[in-house]
Image (tube, rainbow, N blue to C red):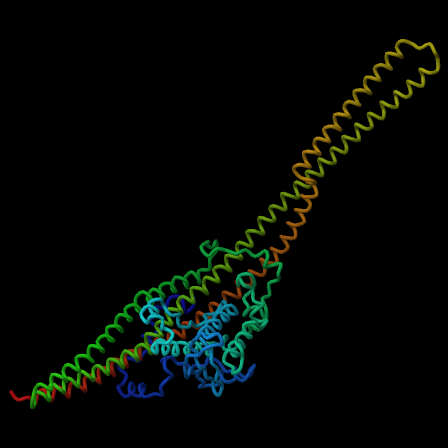
Length: 544
């Protein structure tokens, strides 16, 4: 059973934090360590060493210590006059400006190229609440823009640290100066991908090199036409227990993060922000009040006001740090849970597709068996009819021969015998009877042919055509069955590998998040303690 399956989302992070017995000096040394860029996630973690590079950007992002930065965000207008925000992305000496919609299309492209991988999320679009609150100026709100800068930077660094996504040349082109992103989206690699990712093998698994997605899907056009499009609500007949456990764990993880922790954290952050604003107002009140008093009391009130002002500053700093170092990564992991659900859903659909292909193949084999039996039965009936016609024709020819012989005998003499006329009369009766029978048979054949013409112009040809099409369909389905089974095997292995990688990443990130959460509160408490200790001394100096 894999790492992803029976691990509580917080157990790993807590177990990896320092023990209570760690010295205060070690904690201080941890605090003074070189600061990471903006969001406190270890972007400098490089999963492996690479020696061959496809371009300069590829080499740059695989160099140890390289961090992708978003250095600026500014309002820009296009030729039509519409305005938008562009973000300046810097990798080494390379700088390129990209807008939010281009980040969004990059992520969608990576998802289409790598449907079996957990592609990092980007910040969500502005909500209706944002637009309503800011009266249509949400795009220009400084706080929202700064948050997007941090989260888009996190997205780029997560991609650059992924062992497979970091090798994708489409990603390199996104970071390259002077490259038109629209041209990249229209390139053969992306334009040749099927609109429905179920109709073909995953692009990242279709090449002999698993890490490369530079080839088109292996499924042929014929296979694509016979592959079913399953409904996600359909249950599997033979589900894989590993992925049932993974789906259950992911749902539980999503509930813990989204429904419990994230909601409660938002309320806490809002109250801290409100407290900071209240401290700002209260400090001004204390300072004004001190002007109405004199002597030691005035100094004491002023010092309390200064302590309140210090609490205002410390609380404001706390909320800013918690937003960047805890709330935003927490929001990322809430989105990560949804990404994992989509990846597992993709595998579920491919598994369902394989089962439906096998079912369709069995049905077509059964239909072929029925059609072939009908064809054999038709041939037996046709042979019987031919044999019956042969017997009838032989009887008629024999009767006609007898009549001709008797007629020749009657012409020898003029005096005929009575019994000869009697035999001749009987023979004529038999001949008429056969002629009537042939006439009735002919009429029946005409009626039968007319009825068959109304129902089917040529039922035998139709049946043989159906047999041919069914055999062709069976060949295609057998090929599709082999392909879908191989795809499912590769998909399951790729997803499991990335789930295990994500689990290790999650433990590291949650550990960093929880440490930063604790450090920020410790710093906040220290600042408050210092200012209030000074206020306490000043208040004690007031003589009663």
